[in-house]
Length: 106
Image (cartoon, rainbow, N blue to C red):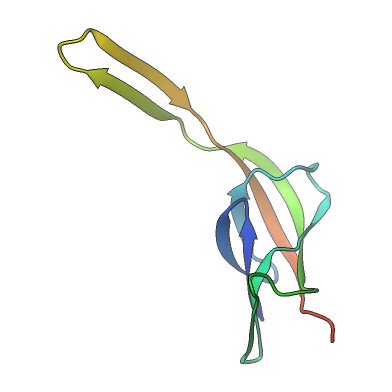
């Protein structure tokens, strides 16, 4: 059984006991979180596709740790104008472990 979930505008294919790194989610480390934007569920060859989400389906995950990505340098320059700007950015991420996938109820 696997599901495709939307977390922070990005899509992830998840199964039970998978560990993923997703954009930052509000919560505390060690707590459970419900991911209710399930786009697709496949169970024993039976595929259910949502329009846009599968109604009543959810994925339960545990927040493992909050971390930050590597630094990205943004450099802008306009030649012969004396204009240049250098900025840095680090993205926040959340490590999740998928505990269970609950298909829609009939």
